[in-house]
Every structure is written in C-alpha cells, then in structure tokens.
Length: 632
Picture 1 (cartoon, rainbow, N blue to C red):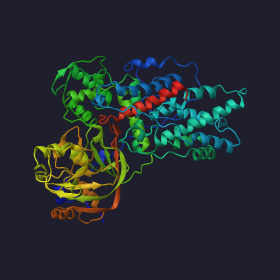
Picture 2 (tube, rainbow, N blue to C red):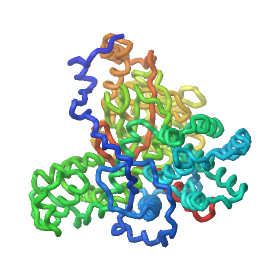
Picture 3 (tube, rainbow, N blue to C red):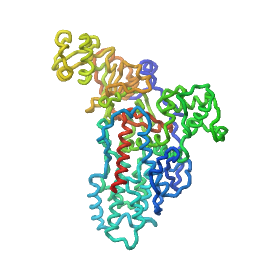
Picture 4 (cartoon, helix red, strand yellow):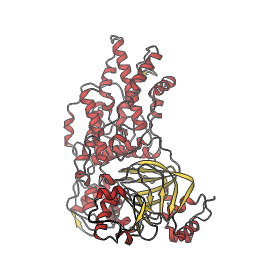
C-alpha cells in the first residue's frame, strides 16, 4: 500500500511524529584527510599523573611511520614517534582505568568476576597460517619488498595507529614486532625469519578479527548480551591478501565504513587531542549554580563549556589566563542546556548537582567511553542498515530508521530495572506482528515474588486488577479455591498462573510489538505514562515500554493499509485481543551505547545504567595487560 502522511485525526490519538528538520539532519562536516603526518593520540599528563607508571620509554626508534589513522582538526604538539606511541598505549590503559576511578551509580553493582574474557586469536588462525605458508612453498609474504617498503612496514603502520580505533598496539605485540623487523639483516637465519613471518600473519589476523567483529567476545562478557558477530575466515583472508598483494588497500578496506563508526572514531581523535592539550580545564567547584549568579565559579563553568564545545569561544574571556568574576547569563544558560541534552539530563539550563557531576568528569573517562562503544559497534559491523528499529538502553530511547542514521520516528522508552535479573538484554530479532488489546500472561517470577504477597493481604487482588487465576491450566476462584495462609512462593510459582484481561489498567496497555525471541522480551504500551518524564527510566521487569506506541503502530501498518488509523481504532473498539501480521517485517536491535554521535554530528554520553561498560573495560584492559606481561 502507498504510505500516507500522518493525518490530523491520527495525530490526535497516535501522537506527533513530526519530521526532523533539514537543519537537524545536516551531516557534520567531514574533517579533511591529510595523510602526510600521523598524529598520535596523547593523554594529558596533568589530568593523569599516573602516566609515569608507564615506565621508561624504549631507546629504539623503528623506521615504521604509521600510514593509517585518524587525522585531527587540531594539530598536536610535535613529538618523537615512539614517545607518541608509548603515550598512546598508556592512553589505552589509563582511559579504561578511568572507568573505575569515578564515583557513579554502577560502583555498587555486582559485576561477576568470571565475566572478563576477551576473544583470543581465531581458533583456526594457527592452522590457517601453516596452510598459507605451505601453499606458498614457505616463501615470505610480509618481509618481501613492495614499493620500497616491505608488506611488514605497511602492517606495522596500521598496528601502530590501532589506538585511533580505541584498540591497543600492545594487543598485536607491536613493540616486539617493530624491534624484530627493524633488526633483520642478511645474517638473520631462515628459522628466525620464518618465525617473524608467522608472527606478522598472526598479528594481521588478530587485527582483522578485531576490526570486523570486535576484540571481546560479547556473549562471554555478560549473560544479558546476546550478540554473536561473524568472524572472518582466516585462511580465506590470507589467500585474498596474497592474491591482491596490496597490503595498504586491504588494511584500509577492513576498517568499518558505516557512518556511525566513522563519526565516533573521529570524536575519539578530537578528545585525545583535547587531552594532550590539557583537557577541559579546572573542574567546577560547589554543588550547583543558578542563572543570574555572579561569581568566579560561573567563569570556571563558562571556560569549561567552551573547552567542551558547548559554548562558542569568547576571545576576550579566553585571553585572561586565570578565572575572573562572571555572570551566569542567558548565553551560559543555553550552553548548560546544550550540555545537559547531550548527556541525557533535563535540559533546564540550571547547573545543579547532577549536571556538575557529569560536567566534571575528566576527559579520560569520556575517552574510555568512546573506546568501549567503538568496540560495541565493531560487534555489529555486519548489521544491515536501512529500515530498522533500534532501542538504545542507556539513552532510554527507541528510534525508527528508514535508511542509514537519519531518524524517521523517535520515542522515549522505559527499560528493565538495574537489578541483574530484570535488566533488558541486548539482541536482534525481526518484528513480525503486533497485538492490539493484548492479554498479559504474567511471568512466573512476578506471580510468586510480587502477586502472592498482595493476594495474601487481599484475596480480591486479582479481581481488582482484572486478572484470572489458573491452577494447572484450569480457571479457579481466588476467594474459595486457594488456602492463602499455607501458600508458598515455590508452589504458587510452579502450579499457578495469572492472566490479565485486555482493558484499562492492563500492564501492556493497548498494543504490544512482537519480535519472537527466547528472552520473552517485546515492546509495548503502558498505563504508567508518568514514568516517561523521568530522566532515569529503568523501571520495568525487562520488556521495553514505548511512549506514543500508536505512532509506531501507525508507521508499521502504513505499508499495508490505506488508513492504518481507522484500522487500529476499529480493532481497539472490539475489546478483543487481535494479532496483526506485518507484511513487511522489520529488524529490531536492542542495543547498549553509552556514547555515540547523532545524525547532526553531536557527541552524546549516557550513564552506564547496567554496569556493562565496567565489565567490558575490565576485559579489554586485562587482555592487554596479560599480553604485555606474558609475552603472548
């Protein structure tokens, strides 16, 4: 059917699905590429005094200048290459370590000690390498000159610049390989050259695997993460590499090309340059500021927002070396509101305690967040774009896309509570139907944990909630057929069931959206509309409650009905549970991004509501640390 625009009548009931303005959709200007010089990401030694823990810099300076990486708009201070690489490696450690040094809601949350594995080399990598060299008659590939440089030079350049992806060169044993390749001579034995050849192939396959599918195994990190990225076949990739025999182009080709990854990677470059230039300046003291206030604190706030990019530079102010007395004027209030909006806070322009906590986070912590979310995007490198629904849990937001990253429809959502068993999982499925006037088949855990105490206090509880009580599948009367005094949670949960009939007060509202999965998770309406106005919206038992659900239903049915609004109204009027199949199923992705760049080019951050940043940071940090200490 032909898609129609929202009609006035439909808007009244289904909500305002206003189109995004052309101004909002304008893409951010792409930074000009200049590959003449590699600009290593550096960390600010002032904000990070632990930098000295990195130890002495190596005395050698290998010849390999990275040929790949991000080019930044602001040129960092000139530095020796190895010094830059050493700082970049430290940036990885201390940026991830910063996740654990800040006070946040997740510090008290239990993170399982065994949830720290990181994907090692592909299980068939060693076998593939042996087959590859046997097929070549043991002829070298990496140590053969090409265009004045060996293929190894090109690979080492890419590994050195891996920090621009939020990865650590140490993961690929860059330092050791650089020394060994640089020390090659005519006196180097055949066996030693063969060992280095195989080590370079191993590093290439690991780097390839990391960029195509991520360095961590997402499903091993957390029981609530169900993302299984497809990892490339190592032997096929080695054969293709040798056949093409153009290492720079292959290395460029394996970098994720989607706009979302590219924008976040560019943001990492800008943040690391800011860190190397001194960070965002002094933190804002006190518990809060109000518009109209005149103080030195307001001046510190103004300078920090300028450094963060939320307030345009003020030449007269920035010429002053130290903070001066300043007024919290409308301009500053607007900048605070902008900062609040991109951090998921109520954008009232008032710098209260919550806003100052977010504003005073060090740039290193934000670098860590970007690194972790680049990793999450690599898990989904093969995820098809185009028409889809995404729910970003830390943002408490659902977005419908027609193509790429331009939103077609957006809505607030309520997700599962922070308690581990109630957290909303991460996974992807295809939505195939929706249900109008749905019944609620109450999960056993809710029946035994929450409804039993209510029923013991008042056996009329089920009648008041428009619910039916079943015992072994047979409808019973809760007033006469149950001995509530002797009922236990185990018996009630195992032998009794509860169904809430359609109608006012139904926990699923008037519509639910089904994408069949093994987690019993779906999107649905809710009678508790007031929760959508909260900043923190983790209140459900795991399913996702959607604001303005009929706007979503209208959009999904507009492909198959000339008047989806009338169709929905007619079904609702019957009061009967009705399933409506989607002629065009749509992919649904329940995601977890605490940092991203939106379609307008704005960098966002959110709180780690489920502590999954912490678990991922531990895994990545522990992996690199183990490789450095064990020589893996």
